[in-house]
Amino acid sequence: MIRPVAYTGYLVGGVLVGAPLSAGLLTLGTLGAALTPVLVGLPLLGLLALSGIPVGVLERWRVGRLDRPAVRDPGPGDERGHPPVDPHRTPAEPGLGPWARLRFTEQATWRELAYTVLLAFVLWPLDLLVLAVVFGLPGALLAAPAGLALAGDETRVAKLWLVDGYAQASVIAAGGLLLLFALLWPLALYGRARAALARVLLAPRETETRLAEVTESRARLVAAFEAERRRIERDLHDGAQQRLVALSMRLGLARLDAPPELADRLAEAHREADEALGELRELIHGIHPQVLADYGLGDAITDAADRSAVPVDVDVELPRFTEAVESAAYFAVREALANVARHSGAGRAWISAGCASGDRHGRRLWIEVRDDGRGGAVPSGGAAGGIVGMGGTVGTGGSAGRAGSGLTGLADRLAVLDGTLAVDSPPGGPTVLRMEIPC
Image (cartoon, rainbow, N blue to C red):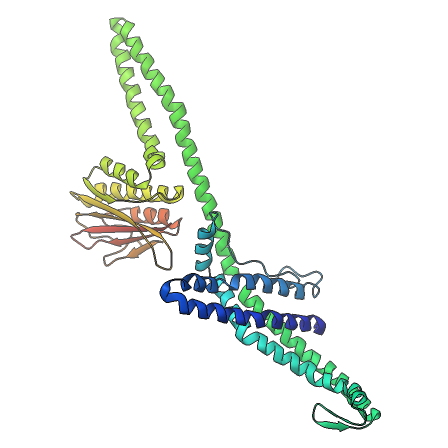
C-alpha cells in the first residue's frame, strides 16, 4: 500500500539530514585536503571515509520506521516491516585500532560512504525539488482565498492568474486541492524508490552475510580445535607422562635390590619404559610444542629446524601473533620440512619469515621455505585450493610432496585462516614454498 504521508515525512527527513551533511562533508574534505601536506589532514580524511557509518545507522533506522507499518505480517522472504540489519561485523579484538582496520576493509563501509556522498550532493536537493513541486503549486492555489483577503480587492495567484473575487478564488483553491491529491501518488512512488535505493546500498548483501557467518563459524572451529589440542597435550603431559616417569623410577629402584635372575628382565623393562617415555614426549611436542606457547613462532621455527633431518639455515625475526596463526604457521613449516626431507633429495634448506603490511589485505605473516633439491613438481589434479603458482609447475607434487598430497594438506591448513601457499619448483630446483597468513 502506498502511504503518501509516510513517504512525505521520509523525504522531509532526507532534506533535514542531507543539507547539514553536505556542509559537513565539504568542510571536512577541504580541511583534510589542505592539511594533508603536514599530515594533520590524514586523520580528517580517514574520518571522512568513515562518515558513512553513522549516516548508514540513521538511514537504516529511517527506512525501518518507514516500512514497519506497511507490512503487519511479512512473509519469510519479505524484508519490509523490518529495518535493514547492520552489515558490519564485530571486531575480534576490543579497541579502536581493530575496529578501524575491520571497517576500512569491509565493502559495507564504502557502500555507506557512497550513499552518504549521494545523499549530501544529489538526493536531498532532488527530494527538496520533488517536495517543492508537489506542495508548492497546489499550496499557492489553496492559498488563493487567503491571499485575496489580505490584498483586499485583487491578487495574483502563483504569479499566473489575477483573482478579484472570492468565487474565483474558491474555484482555484478547489483545483489546488485536486492537484495536490493527484501529485501525492507520484510523490509516494518517488519516496518508495528512494527507500529502495537506501536498502540496496545500506543493507548487507546475502553473500556477505553468509560469508561473515562462515568466517565466524570457521574462526570458532579453529579456536575450538586449538583448545582441544592444548587439552590433549596437557592431559598427556600431566597424566600419561608422569605415570611413565614414575614407572621408570620404580623399575630403576627395583633393579637395585633384584636377584640376578630378574635383573636382566627389569633392565629390559626399564629400557622399554624409557623408550615409551621418549616417544610420548615427542608425541606431546608434536601436538603442541611448549616452545611455541612460551616463546612464540620465531623460536618454535628455529626449534623445528634444529630437529630437521636436513640442515636448515634460519633467518626469522617475528613478533607474537594470535594462537591460531602461530599454530597454523608452525605446523605448516613442520610439514614443509618433513616433505623436504622425504622427497626433495636436498642437502640444505633455508627458512626466512617476516611480516608485510600496506596492501589491501592488511598485515600478513609470510614464511619462505627453500631447498636445493631436484625440484620438478609433478601435477596431481591441478592446483589445490590456496595453492598459487610462482613460475614453476604447480600441483600437489614436487619436492614438497612428489607422490602424494603434501601441498594440498599444507594449503588446506593455511586456507583455514585465509592464507595462501605459493610454489616455485622448476625441474632441477630449487624449490621455494611461500606461505602467507593474514594476521
